Image (cartoon, rainbow, N blue to C red):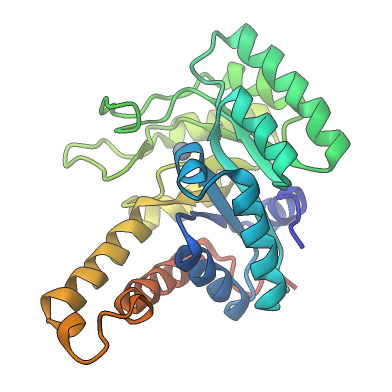
Length: 288
Ligand SMILES: [Zn+2]
């Protein structure tokens, strides 16, 4: 059964660790992440972007696949199915489709409009027992075709949004999506500490978890980060493993062209990446 991310994140804040959000793209991705979480007894959040939702034939297809997989694989650790960077309209689609968590990315709206739309979603999510993530200060990266260096959120705006009653808050602290450029200045712990001071026990979310050095991740967790999003890293390790299989000519040996064989190295690579992240984030064994 899918659960809201609220309880797992409150536990993470109290226990000073973070729960990973791993984005899914297809059945193989979902299976690899769920099996690793179960094996390591870790709570997990499955992230679905609007693009990935479309690719997988709509949010209700995704919700049905994930729910069935949890049942068939006998997954007993807490699993939240979460919309990543949702538009206002996308949030309503996921609420209808049976997701247990949503992120409303209102960071590009003027703060008043972000407040208004977030308040409406807070009310609905409360009614439905879902968790809601809000964003303040756009998180840079290649997402919109522009490579940003990572904005830093205004701690007062963070407090304003946190006080609306959201479950968790993504604040830009110099983090960006995708691969980090060589001249990246690192996370702004000054901003993070200021945001935490203003928002208290609110679980904070770190986007763009790919390529942030381990010591920075640990420091961020010590300052209240309880959810870390990982997407690009699984894509890179999956692609590298499948490339290696094909370059070694394995698809040409026997029935090596069978998709279940062809994609198997990629699945194993995702499992290894997820395991490494769960160990770094400290969520191993925290499901019980
Ligand atoms: Zn993000």
